[in-house]
Image 1 (cartoon, one colour):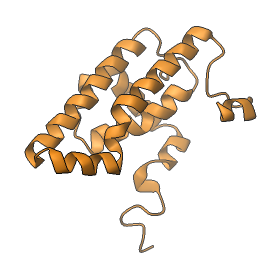
Image 2: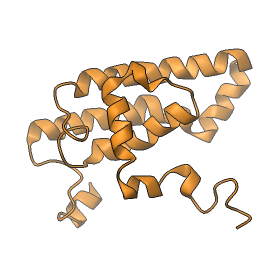
Image 3: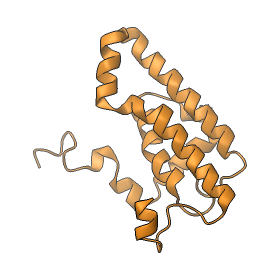
Image 4: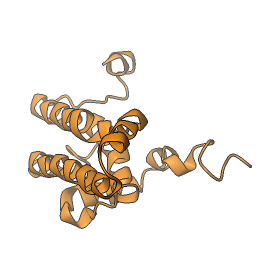
Length: 145
């Protein structure tokens, strides 16, 4: 909300109150259900309590639950992006989770046509490409350069 107020020329939320609500709902699903599974501390905790054979299927089931909710939420609201034709907060929260789900957790994005399309669309945005983990200065393989 600080960024929204500090830089109103680059809004993170739409002015339409209904689209704002959809953004907040999408952000909530990502931040409370999907993203916590990608925190290193959470993964370490899971590693201690879930067998190696059960870990990936369990994580995948939780991600799929979140993605199913997002598909339903966004089905009547997407444009080029999650809630219309401009990038908003929902997109900023979704992009890294979609990438991690497909690359790290082997989620078949074809199960989620809306999210799959958004995932592909985000790759067309240079700012999103720059934030991919493999493009960070400390990414494996980048440290020696």
